Length: 105
Image 1 (spheres, rainbow, N blue to C red):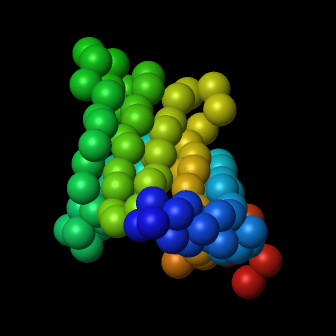
Image 2 (cartoon, rainbow, N blue to C red):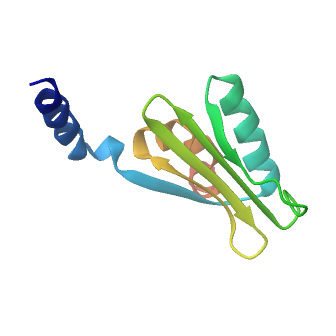
């Protein structure tokens, strides 16, 4: 019966809008690097980091995890930087969103 209660609990969070995926876009590479460093200092665990010769020059990606939450920080020269993850986590990082900053001034 334990798996049934776990499954019901899992289904109950699916409708929670704070857990739906979201994205912050338009970030420069230094902002992503600083964010990754700050999050790991706050207890997030790096599960993947792109380590090619062009890392943080032409392309960058860092995947982080804390509990059940996952974040993907990605940057390339053409599309810029983005952070993908649950809305609840992104709302805490919203200070990084350049569009939010512009609206506050």
